[in-house]
Image 1 (cartoon, rainbow, N blue to C red):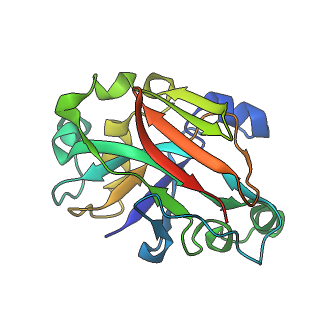
Image 2 (cartoon, one colour):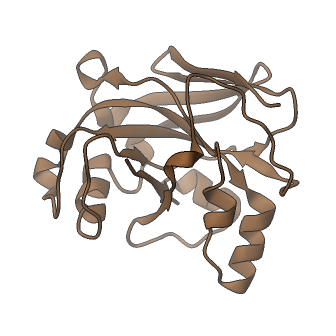
Length: 203
């Protein structure tokens, strides 16, 4: 099982960090040890002083595929959920400064909180899904999949040129604006089309 994460896929997030707009998808991998499931608490690591949340729609791949054509990509997933890509922002900035890989800032243990999944048959079209994140009772992130620069089907087609997708792989599809730091005792809740899928604490 692989965790494939998409960066810079919402204009609002690109603007808040003043990044250049990408002309093709940016993706990276997290190891399976980064998974945080069943709304277990997230424990702040000692190696970072600025861990930030990034709420994302997560797609679960349901069959093996390589070099998938975009028009067939929708047949390679049948369920979506929500995930939080926890990022050690201070370490990421250091990596960016020296042109180093991001794994130390993105792939650490428990850095990928993932919810249960909902069948697409129970949701609106996948290109028009609303989701949001609440931190200590305040809505801090809100997005709609129609705002993606690169659609889910395009991401699958593009990524599968380089990496074979397998059953059970998870695809994080990018975060909207509003990312921010987490602190001990913060309470995170995330909803997809009004359904609460994530509900856990920072320890």
